[in-house]
Image 1: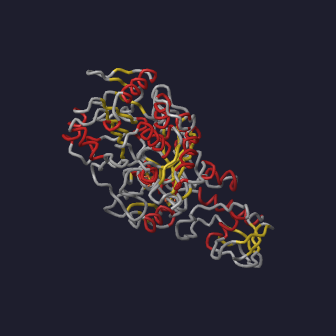
Image 2: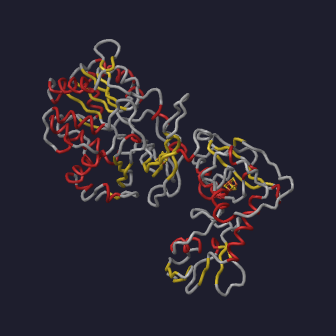
Image 3: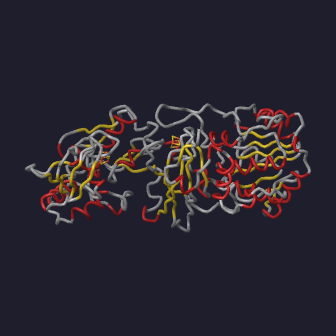
Length: 536
Ligand code: SF4
Ligand code: SF4
């Protein structure tokens, strides 16, 4: 581990560390465009110049490795002048269309000009013009005039997705990013080029002009699109225009986690949040007494549910949990099942279509918490029925009450006719979930759940990593977190478990950690931002 001095501060860094990362360790920022820790070194933008003792000229920090005894200066007059000159070069042909650029507010041309530029422009000639707002794939818009040719996007497609759609074409000031003939930027991870483009050259077709970025609030969360559980930031729209409420979740951005997703997200997950503000969201409890459902208050819906549960022998109740529910939700359900003496409990419903998978991030299991459900024991007790058995018993009129969480059973791998017969033949069907579907349309009681971005909790990913998601927006309408619905029901049924007097998800998690060895010793604080592995 070489020891070196940066701006008078001694630091020790792992062998092979470059001077950008070494400076970071010493608390010094070296500005850069083309360097990205996940990509090969291009040395293209020349912005990361630093002075090194005994070296006659400034060197690029990205391509210089830290060595023993090196003495580095990141803020000499010569370095500052070099940065200013490089910024001037980068902006010579830039259109300066910041007011209509979607990157404004998070653009590293703006940020670095203010920090390291502030020169008086000398460019008086007509700028080179290039095509603007050209869609290059389903998610990405290219504005070639704004591109500084850092080649990050090209290297991403060459080195991370190995799809190689992008290249730099032409020469000199005519050089331009573009697609190879006959290709489109439509690989499964294309949205990442938008994140790594340091300027407004690659923007997000889905997010463009939705909201100026300085109006966004952010919350740390976890993608619920598959069992990987990529770490995300949820960006929410604080200032929704009056004439058009728009969507509340404006976009998802990746959040670095070395063990889970590094810097990346797949497109399916990145753009897969629209259901949160979709018209199909269930916003009020519904009671259906034979005909159309009527909206009712929780004060009417929950006593109705409690009454029906009390009127049922435990072996005639079936609980179909969902691996989309958090650990907290599933623990509350597990405890409620125990209190009721219900043995028919499961979460495994066959998916309607087989999920795609690759050897990078995407998992075939499109649920965020199957592993959590397994560890918590969301499974039939001895003598109880699994999911298929519950459905069969319902079809054969051997169940009086079927409580379905989130699943659209009609779109599952089970034959639709069998599912509908099961629903038809059950006296009380309760649907609890976020969005309406064919099952909620037939249920006697519908309980609206808060979406994962509207509450807090944890998911356990396929690796066994327990990860927190935080509240980004308030629950829509009258929806409640699943654990809260279950705890109110448990309390009304006279259950004494602390889960049923919890007021926050964290209290349910603490109860889970105290009871299930795999989660032993965990707390929200201990999970931190990167999560923790369950005990094997
Ligand atoms: S489009 Fe963006 S990421 Fe790609 S080379 Fe240009 S500036 Fe760099
Ligand atoms: S790989 Fe899975 S968890 Fe990651 S972004 Fe895609 S859908 Fe979400």
